[in-house]
Image 1 (cartoon, rainbow, N blue to C red):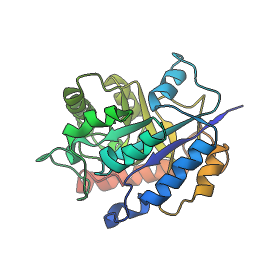
Image 2: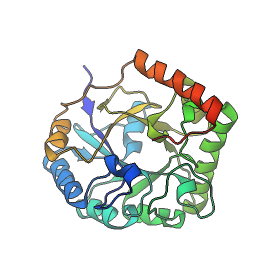
Image 3: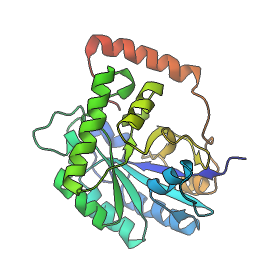
Image 4: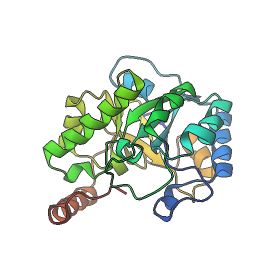
Length: 264
């Protein structure tokens, strides 16, 4: 039997998000209430690396783990968001889009208040582990192989340069991945990669396609409480649906005409 492991995915935590990310933003008040629900659940928060180590057969998990993750690197992350986590002694994993947080770098993410690459060490001081989220935030599964390798390699190198140590974990932008992308992640030196899938992960999930539950502004504390109980979503691993495969075929055809497309 697959034991559910909730892996929560947050983006911006703000009262005033840009329209393009508003659906996936939560207010600071809702965020605080959701964190309190995680604490009250009795689950043991662990960084993503702990789940990845378990999936790779390198370590044990506590009986009822939960993982908190943050994508992109919005401006709130190294400030009030990290402070809210630290106040509750909650570890987390932040996946940073290096092009969006480095002045002068090209990026497909629309404009938004973002943290700076130089603040990545501050995240670690707050107890967050740092992972890569590509350079430009493209739909990786529709890019040519050379472009995929460049996105994975360059983001990893930029973060390792500022942090001074290996960056071993990856998040696919908007969860888009394929067998070839997962292989490229492994070959680039990543020990794990997270997708989205809006599903519960498990102790038998796929190391390079770990499922996450994406928080939307419409989600409530009751939703988080259900996820902490291992309910309210299907449990990975499970095969891709025909609809997912068909959507990838369509996006590949579109990208062949328009070029790289923002994953969002």
